[in-house]
Amino acid sequence: MSNNKIKTKIRRVEDLEVYRRLFKLAYLVHKLTLTLPKFETYELGSQARRSSNASAAILAEAFNNKHTNIYLEGIYRAQGELEETKHHLRMAYMKKYLTQKKLDYFIKEYEECCKMLNGLKKSLKAKRR
Figure 1 (cartoon, rainbow, N blue to C red):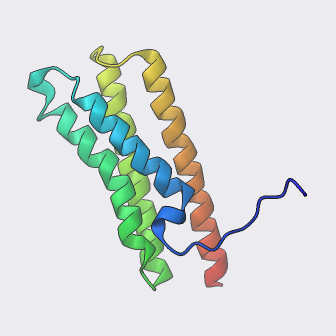
Figure 2 (cartoon, helix red, strand yellow):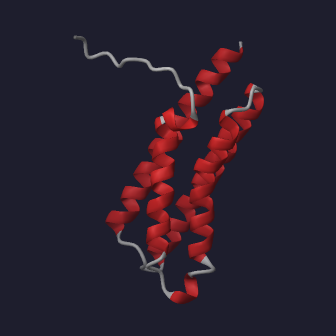
């Protein structure tokens, strides 16, 4: 048996590894925001929860679109939300609500997701030609 990855047909958004990772990150960010001080619940916490959830949600919404350009637009929007989430996490770190280790974990994971989304964009653009 070779070490080559077996290609599987992507039939639903849950088949995309990047979606699964963004979904998990949204959950972890949600859990993290519940530990913020009470006065941050509707400020930093709410913004971080919304942007982290939006990355996965926008990708899910765009996934079934039959128009490649609309799917690509969804990926770009998901990346924008991903960058916004990184901003909120950095702010949480600056306010000492988050350790350097946790910040590094989140940033690394989100950057990996961004790379995966770039790969998905490249694949869709090649398919469109």
